Image (cartoon, rainbow, N blue to C red):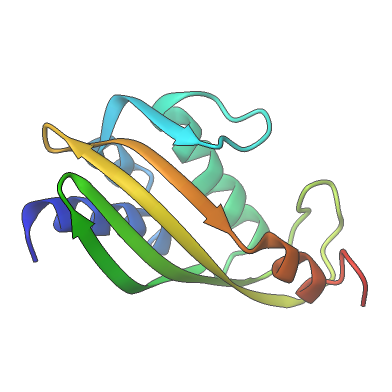
Length: 135
């Protein structure tokens, strides 16, 4: 695995191991999250906030890389995110239900750090599985 893929893989390790310090290692000081979550602060602090929120809501959070591809300085990852909702999510109380969703991220690596990340997650499926939308 080349260096850029290793850097991006560390991003997922931070979330998998609930270790926000790893984000300081891999994210550029002015990292951009596209699109940011509601009320998410900019930069690495925003990523750390998301990590903490996800682990608070899903204490068994798992993010597994399924595919990792690279084109120039961009690394594309398809992953599976799963966990059991034990805390509030988007203002909805926990129903102790498990969700498993797909995600696709494009990370741009510059000077050995992730400079920006474009991402999309299948939260509609997750919201259904958690009983927030429909049954």
